[in-house]
Image (tube, rainbow, N blue to C red; front, side):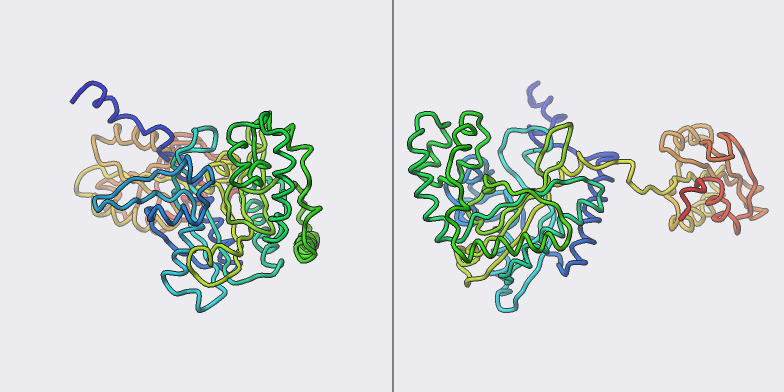
Length: 431
């Protein structure tokens, strides 16, 4: 093994990361909260493979999108077939809908969560393996469905304590977009040589995507471009009006952003994003919209759909970690091997209310030190005398309320749980 190979064993691949310590707790709290919100809106869980045939994403996301053109982790398997680590969840959910013949019983409302993969430039809140929590509502065509999906996102962020600002837009129906695209081509063609390389390419493939450009040279040109609202059909305009009416009824504040087209080809009608301030920078933490033509495009029947995805990594950055509910850690120590069985039974009985550890290496002094390192509030010590008296010795390892670090008590086993609740949990934390 070379020096470089040996070094790489202790390193993550660029753009990947471990979740350890409090990050794991934050991730779990976010997922659990969003699951409860999704269930309350009538969604059920679905799991799809991380690995799919590449053609699924090429067809579903659009061959000319940045995701397909630049960012997918694709490779040939041993059978010579091109497969891809999923870059997003919607295409897989549509494929699952068709594969499992769920198109015959509509509506179908799913949520899912897990890792996605894109070969993108690593930056704050954006990794090459990143986590999403997504929902998909298949079979409902009315604007009320769009409102409900946005309301779910608003409720999820609220329950997580994340302040998100909502931006919405309409990219109209197919007829509206075709007319609008021709006007965009006419406008941007005048500035072709001043556009970024990506926008020059998009001028030929999907001019709508130019509106999503973050290049400074493009932004100045975009500001003078024609507005899609001037080309919306009556039906598309009425649809968007009803979405706004619904948000107003629910008192969900929003702003209209006419450049919000999202990054994938399958969207139509409503698009939206929630942005949160992360280190004084507004970053999208939730994005979604309606995609009525995608199921048919991927070989299924014509089925309307709307969905969203939470960028969990960015939500983690905006999440107040002081909100994480934590059980008190209790350490159970036995003096000799004779007390091991009693210690095991006692620890197991306490785990409904506490996180309980049983350090077993070394003497009592060493194990008390291990208990401190693990963050234990109290150490329960069981020796021969305690077993004979059906009691335990409790030694506080932290000051709590009126009690001090180092205080010791003798407590009957029958009264232990009540005693621990009283001395280890501050009165203002008892529910």
